[in-house]
Image 1 (cartoon, rainbow, N blue to C red):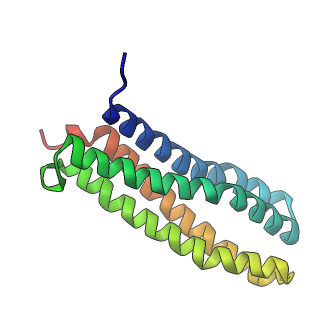
Image 2: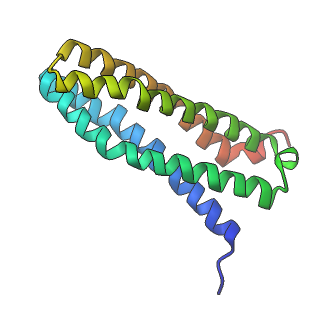
Length: 158
């Protein structure tokens, strides 16, 4: 039995989306409310630094895997962007927006959060964490829409 490259690409694509969006769902819906309700700002900010330090390398891997596997599917299965169905265009567009938001989080508020924690500037750390929280929430919504589009998009429009 041989496994086709297309099967590998689609599986990698789905797994990467599940890891990224699932991680955001856990952080937003489970960890955030517990941390906010039980931890003082210095401890809470240090917790988030540790969480993001472990999660962000996974997001980088997922972003790269999503791009590579997504374009593989577009060019191998659909034979080009012009031949791809509407739901694939939607996934690509929303996915790129999500990746740009992640790049902003990583290179702006995440750096400010680490700097504030190092300086024990808790108000600045709280501000940076608030920006990350908002952007992760936005990306979570976009990710859920993208997953719904992937799952049901082929059935839209007849």
